[in-house]
Image (cartoon, rainbow, N blue to C red):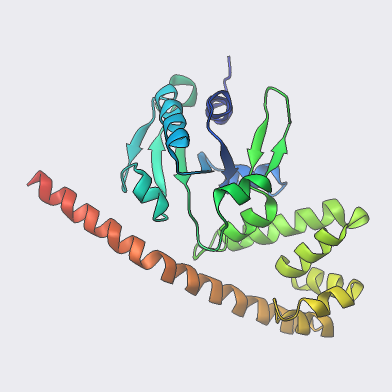
Length: 252
């Protein structure tokens, strides 16, 4: 019997026909940037087969909707996160968060092609959102996400620096948020960094080796991403407020 509630939920997903990708804090744990969370965040496709499979998973976990919006294909397609609380004895109180569309993140079909599979073929096999996609998904307005992005990139760098491939170097140059490391990678891979300055202008500063200036540029880059995320969520928040008002009116 599975006693760990996180494993219980992941086991129910794995035993179903649902194609899903683990993201959020639990995915960060697998990537070596530990984050304690009792939430399980997954990305899914919005089609009849996936929604039916998700419904079966929810039934197995005795999961109930919490908060708004309600579970529907339309709400998922519009970019809302739909939340459930698991009531099954072995998964009691675990919150399952389901999303389909996220700002700046590719379609589920593309995410699935780039997935990372842990323990492939084993009893604990788990499909994670690929690390570059997870990093992109975490570029939000939330304070807690930016230190996590930094830890994810640092973990990946130290895990792979002695056997780095071109894809690693490109990923680090595009995403590293540690000023010293970014300057170091830019110095070691100057031509690659120079070729990416149009995509990430602060690499020009990183090539100069000025750590303080890079730190300031990273701060500006983060603020710009937070602003984009606020603009993305504003209409969705207005929709949620309207849903709450309608719910209150229906109870009057």
